Image 1 (tube, rainbow, N blue to C red):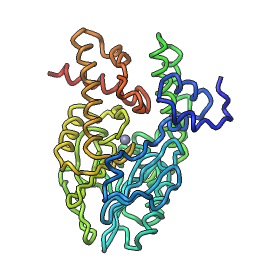
Image 2: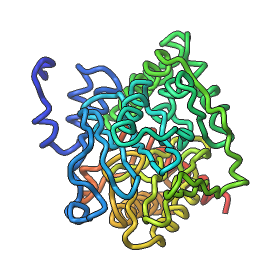
Image 3: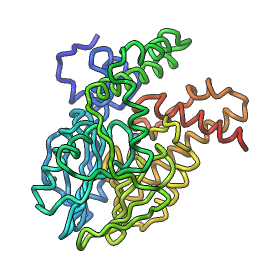
Image 4: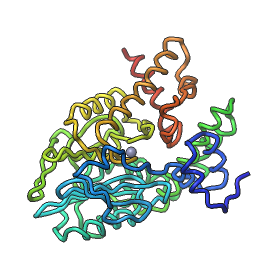
Length: 379
Ligand SMILES: [Zn+2]
C-alpha cells in the first residue's frame, strides 16, 4: 500500500508510466489529478534547445504551465499536468502591432486568466479574439474568463453545440447516473487487463465529471464555418491562418503562421502521448491524413501540440509511428477474426512507446482500434 502523504513526485518522474503504477497511485489520489500526476512534461528535445527561435527561459513559469517565446510575436503556453489541472492543455498567443490572438480556453477560468496575464507581460495591444481549438473540456472550461472580459471567442461552428451536449447533462446530475455504467465495467471485468482499462476510463471520466460539474459553461460567440476556412488574420506584422482539419474531435481548428513555420495544432497533435481518439467525430483515417499534411510542411516547422512538449517534425514522425503501430496490431487481429470488442483490449504497448502516457485506455487505444475495425468493415 502506498503512503498517500508521501511526496512521490521524484518517484513518479523517474518511473515509466505503467499500468501497475497507475493503479497503485489511483487507489489514493483523486480522479483526474491521479491521471495527470503520472504525466510529467518532458524537457525540450536537444535539437530544439539549439533552435534560435525558441527562448530557453520561459517568460513565466507557474509549474502547472509555463509560457515561452518561439518566434517573432509568438508564444507557447505549455502545461505540465503533473503539477495541476489549472490549464491541462497547451495553448499560446500571437502578438502583432495592432492586436493579439489568444489560443485556448483551458480547463479553468484561472488558466485562461494566467495566459492573459502572460500576454500582458509582453504587450498591451488589444485582444482581437480568443480561440478554442476544439470543444473538449480541457480546452473550453475556462471560457467564462473571456466572456467576463469582453473578449470575442472563436471556435468551429459545431463547438458550442457540442459543449452543451457533452457537458451540460453532467451538471446537477447524480454522480452515480453518470459514472455507474463505468463502475459496473470495472466490477464485471473478466480479466485483469480489462479491469485495468475500465478503471483508467472511470478515473478519467470522474475527472471530467468533477470539472464539468464545477464549471459555469461559456460558449464561443463567434462560430467559424469550416467551409469558409482557411481564413487569414492580420495582427499587424504577424499574420496567421486558421485551418480546419479532420481527426481528433470534428471541431478541430489550428493556427498556422506560415512566415515563421509555426503551427499551433490543438489536439490534432499529441506530442509523446498516445492520441485521444474517443470522440464520436474522431476519424483515424482522417487524422492520419492530417498528420501526413503536417509531415509535408517545412522541415524546420515548430509544432505547439495540444498536449506534450513543443516539437519539430520528429514529433510528427513519432505520432505517425504510434498510429502505424496501433493499425498494424489491429489489422493482424482483424484478419485473424478477433472481434473488435476483444481486439481493443489486446493491443500491447511496444517498448519504444512505453513512456508515452495513455490518458485512459478507452479514450485512446481502445477507440482507435474499434474505429479502425469500423473503417475496414465499410470497405
Ligand atoms: Zn481534445
